[in-house]
Amino acid sequence: MTPERVIKIFEVAKSFSVPGRAGWDIFDIALKALYAQREAEKDDPLTPEELRGMAEKPYYHVSLRCEGLERWGILPEQIAADPKKYNYGKCWLAYRHPPKRTEP
Image 1 (tube, one colour):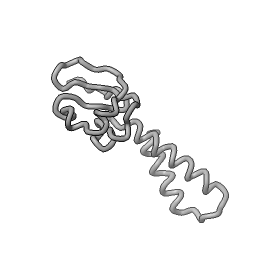
Image 2 (cartoon, rainbow, N blue to C red):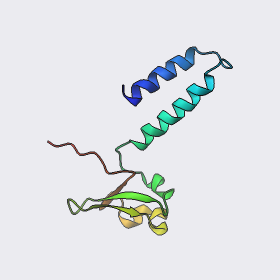
Image 3 (cartoon, rainbow, N blue to C red):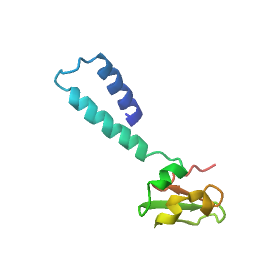
Image 4 (cartoon, rainbow, N blue to C red):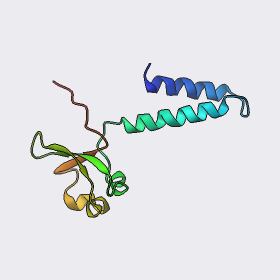
């Protein structure tokens, strides 16, 4: 069962629950964990806004100019402050984890 399916089941079950009943907190905790997992597994590049909050944190760098030039790095503060100034989206992209590849 996928995390998306479990999220849907929990959201539906929670909508039929009465607040204050035993287990209500369990739904909230489980949903928060599943939402966090879904967010962490997104395969989209980070947005410039997301990068601004990533100063001095690890990220996965993908060059758009040199195929195969990919690596983990620590995002410098000056780049996090203004990623577009450093050609973000034109020359390189940043991810939370290595992106999944699909073979043609």
